[in-house]
Image (cartoon, rainbow, N blue to C red; front, side):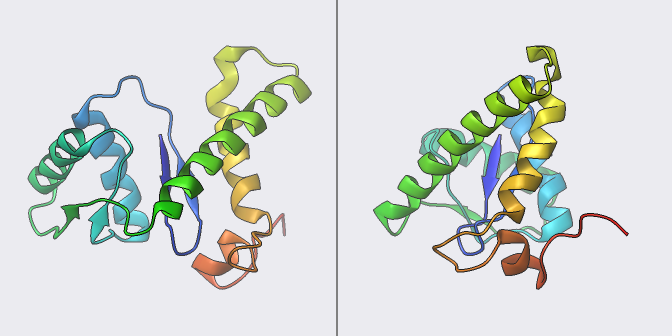
Length: 141
C-alpha cells in the first residue's frame, strides 16, 4: 500500500496480505494516528472501495471526520502513478543490490520509503522529510 500526502509528497509504504477494506483501514488508522488524518481520502481503487475504507475507519475512530473524493487536479493521479512506478523500480533495485529473495521485499520496502522521503523533490523544492517535518532525515548520531 502506498500512502502519499499530496502537499509534502511524503509517503508511507505498508505491505498488505490482502486488499480487503478492513486491512487497508487498519493500516491507514496507524498512519493517521502517527501523522494526522487528511480531510479527503483519494484512492485509485474506485469510489465504492474508498467509501468502504472510510466506513471502516469511522467504525475504528468515530470522531474522525473524513470523506472520499476525486482528485481536484488530474496531475494528482499522475503524481501517484509516477510514485508507484518509482517505488516498484526502487524495490526491484534494492532486492538486486542486496542479493535477497522476493520473500524479503517487506524489508526493502522500509528502505525504499526512507530513500524516497529523503530524496530531493523538484516539485516541492526540498525533500518530503523537510516538507513534513521541517528538517531533512537524520542518518545517524
